[in-house]
Figure 1 (cartoon, one colour):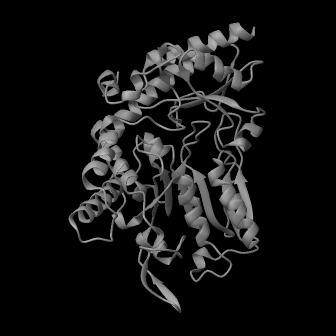
Figure 2: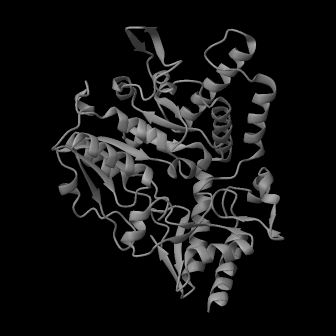
Figure 3: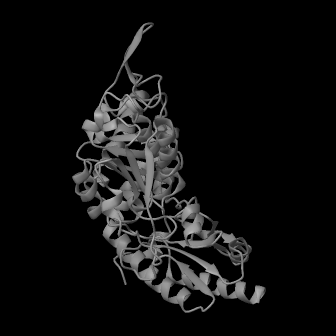
Length: 415
């Protein structure tokens, strides 16, 4: 049905051979964290077994090899997202840190007026954001006296753009918006939003935590100023993420952390700093993790992101139909595959999501339950939490059938 040979591909993922409670593992929680192929695991092990040394500090062979592998990963990650230069890729520990790095640059007395923020200025977000793209801006507004505003959500799980001209105005200094919702699966109209922000003179940050793993992303074509994403959701290890930023903006931003490697010279009376990206990578970086992420983007490139999209679209259509046929299921978010990804949140009538998750786990089906670090979205839809099934390139139609059987068992248990 797609260009993916999923049965062969699954052999690359050792964990998929596991059983849970004596039943085959059905992993439907990739929106939380993805599984890792042998190629990524082997790249990390190879580094520790053969090349382990610190980077950018030594002239010996191991240090040179480690630095080459670390910077090589940066180059491949830059190419994967269409960044004009690897110097626009700043390694962070996750998307949260990447977003906070940008928030740190805004102050009341910033040298660059693009990062100067105070009373009367506005930051615009949306009601469907992950907490990582809400809380840093709330803290920034509190520090500077700026105002935080947001787009609402329609009943269909789309952004409510009816008041876009009232929300994005000349007072807007930053628009921070999720590209692909981690709870609703909605893929937002970035082109329209970026154009409006540009016309207002605002900077734009996209949370690409879900989009970069699942759809082809070309940061140059998107037109945003910053894109944050994280490795563990795209077949890579935990502890590594990245911020892509336009170089001229990164060059105008102050350091996020102070320490070794981010300096040019240090004296007791003052310090000068390295240009980006080194300016933002103080201390020993996550070297093995970056190398693992480089291996992950190699894997995704070999598979082909177009193939990933087509496979996930077919899975999502199948799952929406199957879950939608159950009269006691409420899908929270878009119910068609138009501008939506492979993440489906739902509720079961009269059953708490935690109970749904426990019954599904008994069946070997791993899903996430809760508010998914998107509590304002749950409040908008009048639910305390949801059950979320999220798919990836290794997910099969049989696994979706197992999910549906598990939900039917939930209904029988709590009938």
